Length: 115
Figure (tube, rainbow, N blue to C red):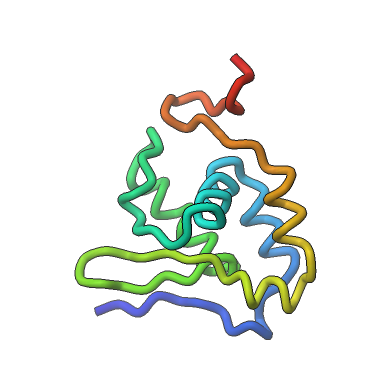
């Protein structure tokens, strides 16, 4: 079984976190995890390739934004809120307050209500 890489708190950098949050799909993943709690990867029904979704979760995990644990065949994701708040106080709250829900059910990503 392959182990998933998660950086220790001391190795989480602001640049990596901002990069991870800079993509609309990854930001929507983080927004949903923040509002609905932990979820498995399959719970996100975005209309993008499975390999692309896997890459988004890898970037979020390796930047220190999410923690992923395996339960059987599923990968359960949760935000590393405590670590992020300790390192960058207020950052996650500010980003989530300004993040608008993203309509990701189509190939073109549009903010909800902007049609």
